[in-house]
Amino acid sequence: MMIKRQPFNKRTAAALTKGLAAALALGGCAHNTGSGTSAADVSATMEAVPSPVDALAVDPKVKAAFATIEGMNETNIDRLITLTEIPAPPFMEEARAAALVEMLKAAGLDDVSTDESGNVIARRPGKTGERTIAVVAHIDTVFPEGTDVTVRREGNTYFAPGIGDNTRGLVVLLSLVDALQAHKFETAADILFVGSVGEEGLGDLRGVRHLFRDGGPKIDSFIAIDGGSDDRVVTEAVGSNRYRVTFSGPGGHSYGAFGRAHPHQALSETIVGFTKAARRITDDGPKATFSVGRIGGGTSVNSIPFTSWMEIDMRSAEPEKLAKLDAAFQKAVQNALEKENKNRLEGDGLTVEVKSVGQRPPGRSDPDAGLLANVRGALQHLGIEPRFVASSTDANIPISLGIPAVTISRGGVSKNAHAPNESWENVDAHLAIQAVLLALLTEAEME
Ligand SMILES: [Zn+2]
Image (cartoon, rainbow, N blue to C red; front, side, top):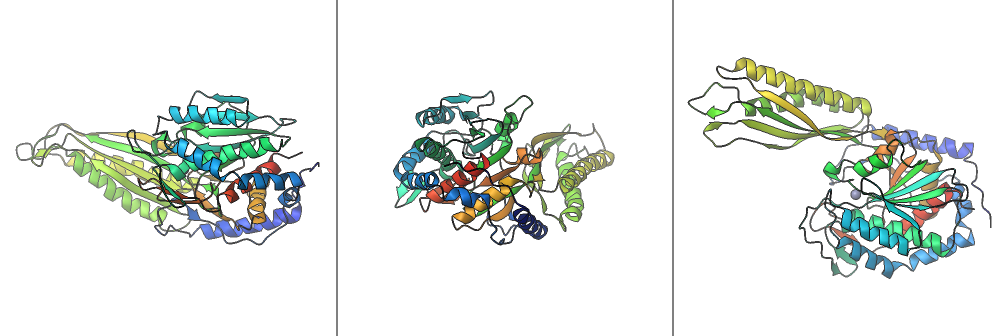
């Protein structure tokens, strides 16, 4: 049976735009409730609208693929345990990447490789190959080398660092390949399956940045699989600017050298000055945040320190707000430096180094892009009402480049991500895979 991509009709577009506009307006005052997630809910529940996905969902082949996915439970648990027990600390993803290459080949893809940054890339050619749809899950975890990653099972729940975030995402990639191969699906567009490196923390999205380098593969549409709630669709990219700031000076005896420029005083002056200015930026309008997460330095209680350092994180999905926060921060550092040096009674002045340790670009997905309608239609077909949220994920890079991109759930129930007692519960885990398959087949134009 041939199914042509249905035109994204005006009514669909209007309803979606209206829904998203309401969602974005709501997002302006949505604040985190301290649930431990970095996402802010930016949507109200939207009315159901006809979707091009519906026509495709009744195709017998798609129905058969859905049944195949439901039957993958055991295989997927084996894959989850195997991959979770191969450590993938930040900047050390090679071993897990190598295993993923073998698994993608075993699933039936021929064109599988690793790029210069360490990303695993598997291309499933389409009939025309005029467009390319990327489906991406990150390989890295936040856990350092030496962390015990042995999987422990209690009933339907599996415990191990990184098991949900995002090892389960890699299992979803493999399941999609299985379903496409088993039923010999043909699409017009190429599909690029990507295991990305460096999504977490100081990895600073380096894998996906590399994917979108000049001369990299052409990608028209991007679906990241990450996050643990089936109804959660990330359409806004929370950008972040992160710095490590170090004040340095001559140091000396706390009594004998009293009056020398004092790095800790300059650091605390920076924090106080910045906090005052930043609150004027963050107190209203679209959400923006800042936090000095770490501070350190000093030798002993009776010494003036040689150095004083801090690490700061500023975030917003609104480029203008993030830029304002950044400018206020740079100014606070310079003001504090000048003040401390001016007030010193003896010795050399302080110097300061402001080093960038992370820049994730902010932005919003185009609400009129077909991708958003397809993802929404796929979820609704499975009885899931999507919530559109803002978060920081691999999709930040394509979103900031104006390429349609979303991040959707890996399925099951994820708990305690980024904590040693992380767990993943095997509940309705097939739904997320079916949702991605439907959205993907619509987006890649199943033939
Ligand atoms: Zn993740």
